[in-house]
Length: 340
Picture 1 (cartoon, helix red, strand yellow):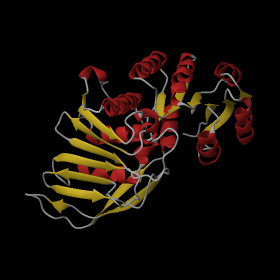
Picture 2 (cartoon, rainbow, N blue to C red):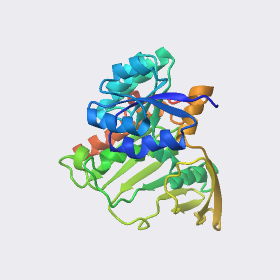
Picture 3 (cartoon, rainbow, N blue to C red):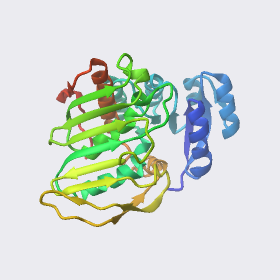
Picture 4 (cartoon, rainbow, N blue to C red):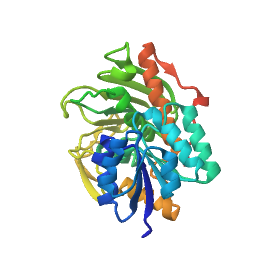
C-alpha cells in the first residue's frame, strides 16, 4: 500500500484548485503525486502548476508523453469534455479518474467502459455524495430490515443555492446515483420530474421533484427545494414494519473514520412495533483511499463505472421527463448490468 500513484491532472478550474489540489498534495500526498497538469487555458494550468510543483501543458497528449502518469485525473468543465479526455487517456493505457457526471450520454459511457476493459485499465468516477451520512444511515436502516420490506423512500436535498448549471443538472446526478444505490439491485421502470422552469430544465430548472418507480415495487421521491435544512427530513424510509425519518447533523464525511449517528427511532406501522432512538455505527473509508487500493492492490473500485453509467441514464431521463412534462418508461435495454 506504500506505493505512490503518479497523477496527470487535467482541468485546472476552481473545483480543481479548491478541492482536488489540496486533496492530492496534502491529505493524500502519501498515496498520490501530481507529476503534470493540463488545461487549454494556459494561465489556469500555470496557476495549478505552481500549487503542485508540476509542469504545465495545454494538450493532454503532451502531458502523457512527457510525464507518463499512471492515472489521468479528469476534472474538466463542462461535463461534455469528460469523454474525449478520458478516451484519449484510456487508449494510451492509463487508469482514469473522472469527476461526475461520467459523460453526457450512455453511449459515451459504454464506449469508455469497453475501452477500459480492452486495455485492462481502471475507470473510476467521483460520486462523492455516496459518503453523505444521512444516505449511508438510510441504506443501513433498509439493509438491516428495521422498517421491514420497504415500499417508499423520500430523498430530500434542501438547498439555498442555485448556480449557473442549476439544481437538476448539477445535483441531479448525485441524487439519481443515491436513489439507484438505495434500490439496488432493483431496476427503475418509470420516472417523472417536475421543475419550476419547464422551458429549459437542463440549464435552469430551479427547484424540482421527481418520482422513480422500481421493478420491485419500491417508490422513491427525490426533492430539491430552496428551503432551509430541517423543513423536511433528509431521508424517510417506509416499510411494512414502520417508518424512519433520518436527519443527522453531519453532511458528507470525506475522511476515513468511525462515526456513530443518532437516529430518532422507528415509528411502527400497522403490524410493526415502535423502536426507541438508537445509534448507527458507520465505518467509513475515504474515496481516494479506496481508489489507491484499487490501483495498487487490485481492490474493488469505490464506484463501478457501470453504476456511474446508469446514473447518467437516470439523470438524463429526469431531464427529459421534465422537458416533456410527463412520466417516461425506462426501457430494459437502456440499463447496464452492474457488478454484484
